Amino acid sequence: MMPNEESVIIRPISPEDAGEVLTLQRAAFVSEAQIYGAPNTAPLVQTLDQLDAELVDALGFVAVVSGRIVGAIRARERDDELLIGRIAVAPDQQGAGIGPRLLAALEESTTCSVAELFTGSLSKANIELYSSLGYRESERVEQGDGTAQIFMRKMLTTPRG
Image (cartoon, rainbow, N blue to C red; front, side):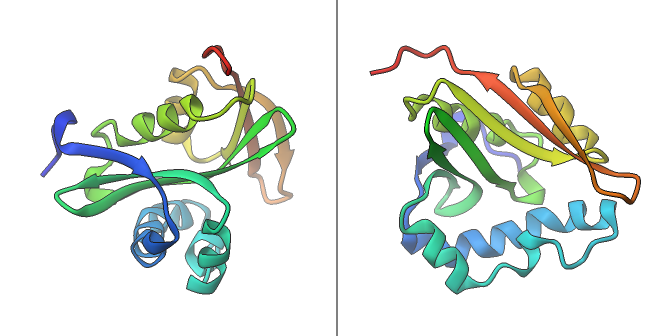
């Protein structure tokens, strides 16, 4: 069942979320792995210890519906850039606007003037979503197998404090 907007709580990610976020991440990235024929893609083989270490100082948010984490986003700030890492939304919740809400929360939480994320060239839905949210392709890195990593950037215009 898709949540209504009021039933989705967006809150900062914490190390205590690691186990549930790892489960969510694996469920969310199965379809991406299938698109690319890559069952050993990083989001699927990341360990709980690795995620625990990442969450110690990661900037990020989770989306919670009825006590269940249904979305997560993580990033790092480097100089004046917000480097967005993994965005994961539970397969049964995709299309409910959770990804855009997580991105907005992250963008609003930073003082960086530029946000950058990446996706694969075969991930058409991701590319369309990010484009609709103001991200533009800034670099394409060919992978040698007919696919490319597509880096997308967005200027953040929220007043900085």
